[in-house]
Length: 127
Image 1 (cartoon, rainbow, N blue to C red):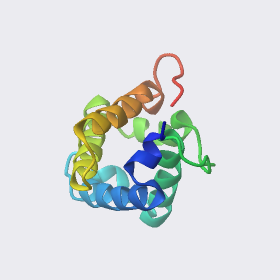
Image 2: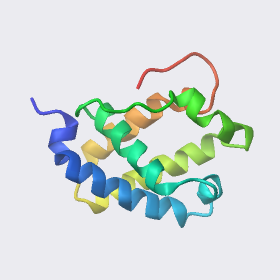
Image 3: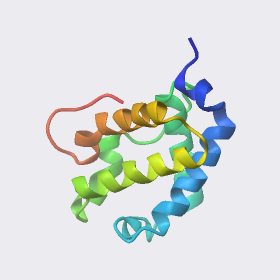
């Protein structure tokens, strides 16, 4: 059985979705402020590697874990509504690239599985 990474179209598809996703993020008033001081080329590269890994592709992600990577954002007010917006925009980006609703729901489930780590609360999750 093909991994979700393969099913979505491999690296080219992940790259395209991430580019669309960050265009949406940067234009969304709910969350764009969290990216004001971010090197977006570097951020997109990290997100591509992370999504590739969690979708079952080659594991090349070497970034911080979810808690460490988002701690400074939680200190700036990152909360559930922001995570919801990110998941919503990721879903819209996937839909724009022809991903099925069932696969979008699977990706949303994966994103939700790390919510507590992103928000630095409760026990640790594993992506």
